[in-house]
Amino acid sequence: MAPKFTTKDVSKASYVNYLKKGAECFHVAQTSLKSQEWNAAAINAIHCCIAACDAMCVYFLGKRHSGENHNEAAVLFRSIKNSDEFDTNTNRILRILRMKNMAEYEERLVNRSEAQKIFTDSERFFEFVKGKLPEE
Image (cartoon, rainbow, N blue to C red; front, top):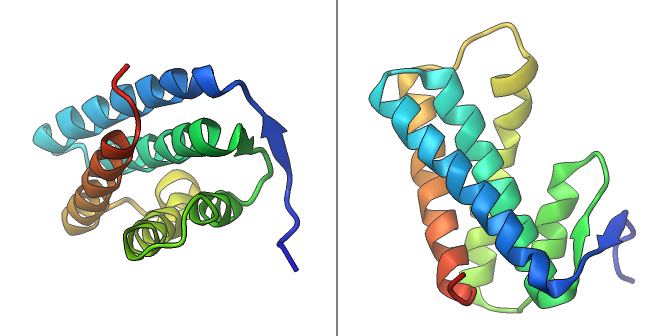
């Protein structure tokens, strides 16, 4: 039985908007990392991946996740194709999403090694997504 979660139908052509959002968040994450702004780097890297995940789902499925639980977006992403590379990148986005609550809402700050790990995973995920989508 297929998992049930909330999605929103989106025109396939809108994938470029989500990809642009991802690119802007990635740029800010990269700049923040260079400036040793660990919290901003992590938060923007996370949001880069959420937007990239939406871009893939919109392009291939004509919908995006619209619920509260971002892990469900990874499940939707995984449904695009049954392959090792999608498994790897589903696991990658789930790792990134596990850090979202801490980075955005908890009282503790993101440390350097956490920010670098999130950024590296984000960069790999974003490159994978860009490689699967037509150029803008």
